[in-house]
Length: 77
Image (cartoon, rainbow, N blue to C red; front, side, top):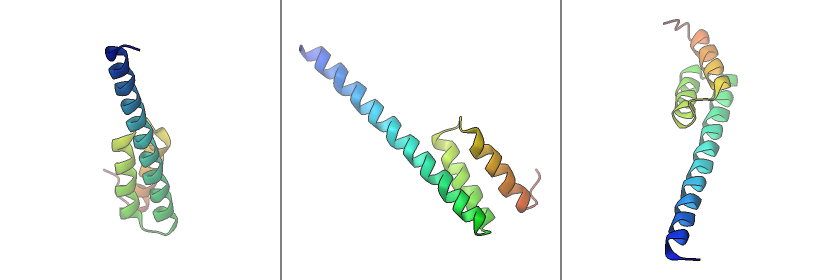
């Protein structure tokens, strides 16, 4: 394997690893938001959902749960 191939493989592995960590962190924040919401801590749940969305803005269920938390807070705008 030549040097350029080794560098390309290393970059690929680092990027892939970082994406997996980010996805796991997004899931962790989502689950934390769910726990906080169940416990009635809606403001904290909103913060957790927002952190999750920063890491994975394509997670539609997080937007839904964020909306529910805002509804519980009666924050409609």
